[in-house]
Length: 306
Ligand code: HSE
Image (tube, rainbow, N blue to C red; front, side, top):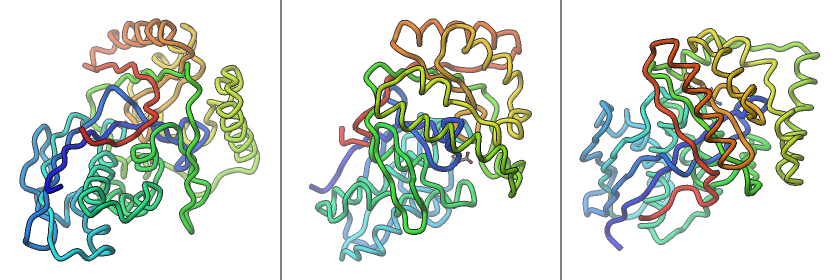
């Protein structure tokens, strides 16, 4: 195999109670990438469509993640990468992670799969540093593995994949304003109160338990964030309005998707998700800010060859 075309899905990170550790993979939105083997060693970005991103390998998320796996495997050939962006940068649904995960997945396939998908998370994380200034895996892990993922630990990296209960649907409202992950991280406090930490880890345990036992009510009441959301929500115009419209129309829970500005809701069943999407978009029309909506099942496969 000399060339591979891949679908790199969008993801929702944090899921309210799991800042930097929880994430899920979406089905209906993602980028495409083409990766080919070439005789010249190293990595060259040859084409980018749909976004204005750096072509220099060391400045490009896909380039940096790709170099991480190439430097480890050290093949006597190189790779060209084409990136066709559909996920907007700074949208909060894992745009940079899709590129990082796509690069390492595609290169691994062309190398004959020397690494497992779990091992690829480590390489992909190196690309995330370029976008956010920190190595976090809560977007790259679900993008590579599909389903829900929990980063149990970072040192060493320990990622646990959790199957999605079959009726979970995600709704995403993406306001067309850009929030850089680095800016969204800059508003956070480096220390937190014990009282809030107790609430947060109780909810995280509840969410994981609810996913395993398919207890939708438990999932819903665990989708709370008393630490990050209060600080970040001022970056998202009319956040409370859209969140409350999701909850009032039957969402299990709602919050900030990743670093924002997208707002997500989780719902039980497609009919509920469509009702929630309608309510969220109706309320957001009042702001006059353009936006788009996505309704998606959880993608259980993750990044894939097409
Ligand atoms: N966990 C990260 C954050 C995700 O919220 O900053 C951003 O991609």
